[in-house]
Image (tube, rainbow, N blue to C red; front, side):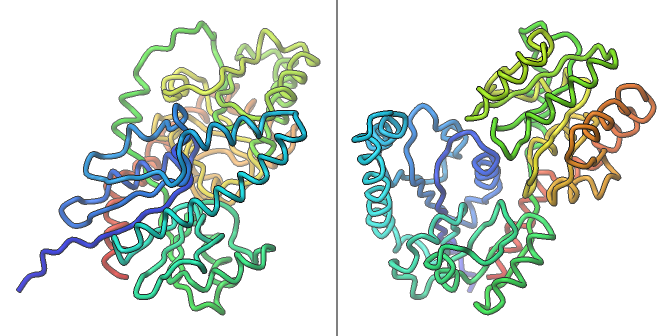
Length: 383
């Protein structure tokens, strides 16, 4: 007789805030076939209004938050406070959050025998869970899988039966560094809903930004927007007409604003913050630039290619894999001069820019939602 029982899967993640990993989770949930699988999504943090991707959870996916909105609001309040006593309370609450997460996670362990640790958050406490008869699958979105400095986390790797990586270099490094645990290492590229990206990109922007180059991502040191601003200054000195637009928010905003002011670029560089629909800004741009030091598999780079933009990226494992070492876009050394030269070469060479735009569209189709669905189902059925 044919077995019509659905496989039951627990997916654990950290939050539903804005971020590449969180966006990819929403794409993963889309491709899970409710006819084959029953899924419970466990989210460690309820961030209230910052749960941007909560609305994207399909109705057939059950989900629960492991810590409350009220708890997270208080934690955030103490984190931002300059009061020394609040700093102590913040530290104590962080420890308490871990205990609450463990306690609540245990309540749902009987739901299914497959657990996907989507942000590797269970590395902190999987030794405290009864995992007998269960398959724990880690999903790595960043880093190269080297030996962990945290001895407890390193030791807890042995509880994972499989780890999914998102690029080839990551896969090789995990294979080398976790070989002693007998973990099976897999590579599954990120994938995106091409139709939605293209449809959203057709919306009109309200701002008058003129011609502009665009970069999208969190304002963090790793994204290296400071080098992009200095590279842009060189382009302004060469007489280009384009402005620079940066979408995203983060702790580096103040440093970026100071650099913009010191370089007299206040009329040419726009920090527009987080936009719910970045695609329409990408579509209207001259080209897309990414200056990160490291990327596992940069979604916004791929999104820009799906929209048909020529792209310039600094060297990192994720970008090199998407761009196939420069075949589908320009890859430059991560320094101000090379970033500036790469952008300038596309601005002044219309034929090269058009060719890279055509190649972007071609490459983008290889990471469709349907391709992702097939790979995910093949993986789940193989374990």
